[in-house]
Image (cartoon, rainbow, N blue to C red):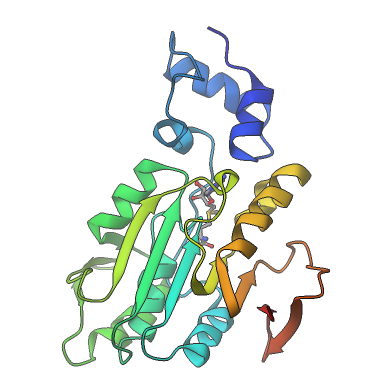
Length: 238
Ligand SMILES: C[S@@+](CC[C@H](N)C(=O)[O-])C[C@H]1O[C@@H](n2cnc3c(N)ncnc32)[C@H](O)[C@@H]1O
């Protein structure tokens, strides 16, 4: 079976080239794309880059907007660093729901493990700050120039992870905040449109949507563009 580039683009919304299709072909020789679970192979053609406290101004916006019982969906969270970063920043808030989803099962399994190897200086510095908090969920093991990071009590902190394709609609439709950065930029125009629909449908009335800096703007009467410090976000008015 030869994988079809068009099929793969349609299924993921991603702006893929023949190289990604060839890679998939090589890895999964002999299996039909239609009979293949897209979540099982997504790591072969997606970019998983993520790190702790990335887009700090947007995480600070989340902190400012969060009160008890807040629910936040991190769509396209890759291996989960943005979810864990938010959880550390929101550690004083009880009964929160932080859901991270991604197309790739492999990335979600990594996120669920709660174990990371960190070598960026800025990440190490920030993580060390949070380890000092009383009852921290964070365990750090210093090596010479890197850090082994382990998050415990994921459930207690209200964190969950799941596989989800943004081409299939919202994960659920009642989130106070939907956060999706560095995901849509890898998509085709059609893919972006579909993904944006899913993200907008995931926000409850009065809730907010946080997108990437280069993502499309929303021109609909029930959405208002807002700014907090350097962070742009969209409020769903009704
Ligand atoms: C560059 S990472 C961004 C991770 C994280 N949001 C961040 O900013 O650090 C992009 C992620 O989008 C995910 N992705 C791509 N297409 C997707 C889709 N159709 N549905 C859900 N996630 C998708 C990829 O699997 C990848 O993990």
